Length: 253
Image (cartoon, rainbow, N blue to C red; front, side):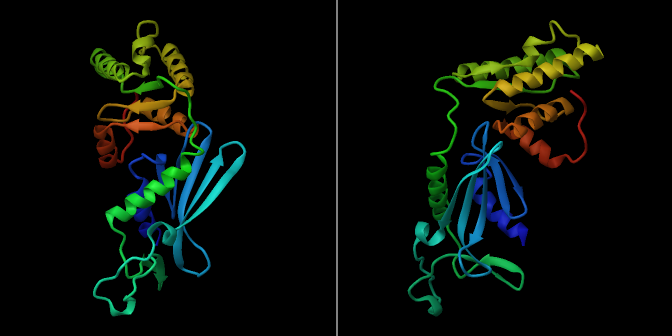
């Protein structure tokens, strides 16, 4: 049953535009609105058992708990929708999900892409009230990319990505341009110190951009740090596809 609800929530939030760094677990979507605010979205009932006719949005502070909750009723967003060629619903139906015999499905009416977009707009309008505005002007963007292997090539790759961030008007934080000249990655003590300093840089940034065709152990550590702090993580397309294909642990950074 959770697979159905996850699929419907992915239609709304998987692109990360409304809920940052979305994660799907059970029947809920979890994500962030900024460094301190998080959000949970799930379909909910409002009076009839197994009759999911609302989208429940809960905003939470990661330190203080729940901030606010919205029960967004689907009938208020979509109204009554026509069901062509169905004599049982000549006047249309208020869309909802129902569970019959343990199997959830949309009852008589399947929401269209336009319906999904309308629901997304309502959620975004609500969350915009709570979304943390870090600051006006450029954002601090952490450049997360592989280093080990062909070090010189990887440094040049990171430099190019940092330049892209700079040209977009934001401020790149690129550890590959900071630490290799002063910390030998082949020296375990210096390498560990550089890793820890990199994580401190992650804590100060507004978002983390992930680049490359693999997520190395060092990158995963940086990504995990950002997600724990509610900092948005933006992988590029190549990383996302590679991550889906690979199940095994990746080499160290």
